[in-house]
Image (cartoon, rainbow, N blue to C red; front, side, top):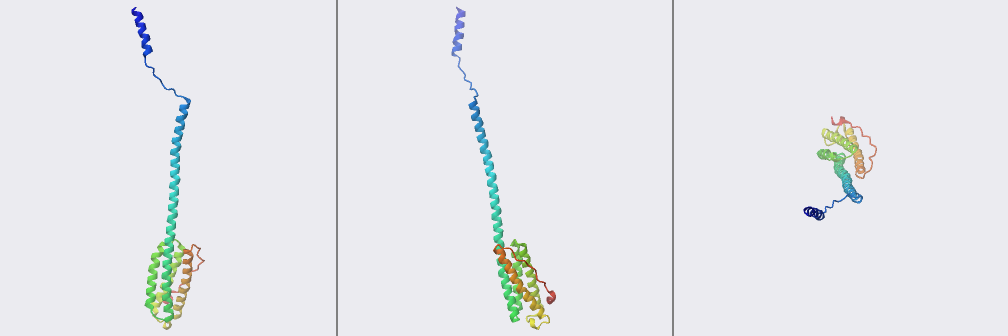
Length: 203
């Protein structure tokens, strides 16, 4: 009788024991996990790629904006120099025609040379800068010659040399203004041959 009770309890115990369900990995579940992993990886890769292209495009735009700013600044500097060259040429013409007011010529040269030295820093065209620098040299020789030989060049022993130098400055003014016009309008500069400078008149 005792044995039968023990056996009956054992059977009941097995019947009442909780059933534990252990999930089984299926092919469909693995496919879903694999697809999710690919999706996350693709999103990360797409974000990195998109970010790189955005960074590259932003840098290219920055470079274009920087070049545009430099070009605009160069144009403004060239125009300022053109205005000073025109003022200097006015003083040269006045001095040559009236044979007087050498102080005005010297003052005009000083103003031009200072402006050209400062504004030329902003020029992006080295050839234009070279031509402006040579114009400064010519104008300095004329200014020095006028100071040495006085306000009346016709009474100077080297009057012819001084007047020739004034004419050289006038022609070179036209050449430099033409180069500035080409630079501002984005055109190539015309061929250029600097005129010789006769320094005997300023000695």
